[in-house]
Amino acid sequence: MQKKWFLLGFAAVAAFAIACGESTKTPSSPTPAASSDTAAAAADGSTLKISAPTLSSPANNSTADSLTPNLVLQNATAKYVPATIPTYQFQVVDSANATVYDSGSVGAGASLTGHRVPADKLKAEQTYRWRARGTNGSAVGPWSGYFAFTTPKGLSDSGYQTATAVWDPLTNGKTVGNQTGMEFSANGARTIGNESNIRYDLLQTISAGEYSFYVYNLNPLSAGDKTKLMSMQEGTGDITTNDYRFTVEKRGVSYPIPSQVRIRLIAGDADDHGRIFDSAPEVAPLEKNVWYFVRLVWGASRVVFQIYNANGTTGAIGSQVFYKDMGYAPYTYKPLPHTAWVGAPAGRGGTQDASVPNMTVKWLWIGAAGTPRPGFSQAAAPIE
Image (cartoon, rainbow, N blue to C red; front, top):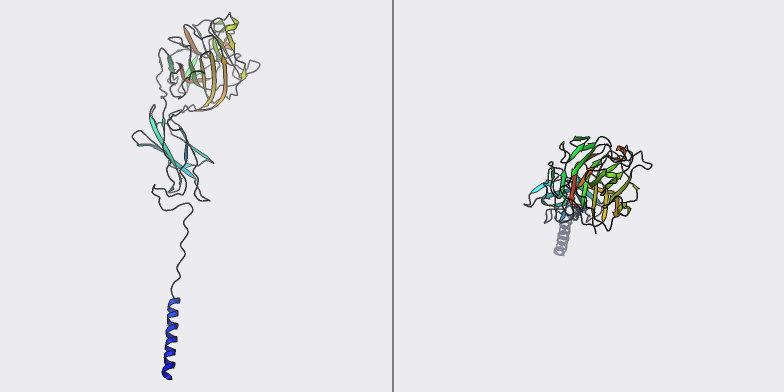
């Protein structure tokens, strides 16, 4: 009997010992949740859980508007919410795939982010590719694909004249034309007064083409009456009654409605009123002490005149602030000899109707239709 009780007691002690041994095992810890924004590097090297940004401009296989293009992207999206994408990195590579510019961290915009390539990084008439990615400190998202773009012709400091074109930078203290009363500086050529102008004797008639330049300080209340921003004519006689008068007026403070813009084109006979074409006068929303790009295009019996906001340092073209078009069918503009002016010479109305005063002009171009304009990708397109 004692042996039986002994065996039962031993079994109970052993069972208790086993139970206690099993209860001392350390419980396994739950697997920690992965971070919502970052993780170990992916196959592409990215450590930020976001999409690649969508490139916007310059568009793929396009021509940039300057040698300092503004790179614009649509912001990346996060794979988890919330997520922070405070900065972006832009890269530009050349045709040999060598990096010519890396922006480092650039602050993000609300939905679009832009960054301008600094001067002296890109060369004229070259093809480059650009890409971008989102960043957050040392964490980086995936790179976008590449977009290719070509840079425009450079804004050369050397002026020239050919049979079909005039390029005059006007920033080198001189002009390839003939100046009267102008002041030259590194910023361009300034019309000191209404009597100031520059004359260009073209080597042949340009019956369809472009005349454009950058201009600073188009003061809506500048001195004068029916003052001229730019003009053309046949020869050098009185421009008011010239058979091929072609003038763009920016009217001054002496006119009843200052800052009106009006185009007049005479197609071959100043005494034939059927050949005189005038656009309706319209006030242009101009501001003094800012840069604009002005562009006059003619041909196929139609004139288009435009004013754009512009960057006077880089040459980049901004938004359009004025547009006017006018037909002159069935005639052709064909002065011989063909003369063009910055401003205009004094005609029978006197100097108060001559040039817009105190405006600074640079990077001037006169070219036959289809001839590329240096520094601006949009050459004079054929008029439809």
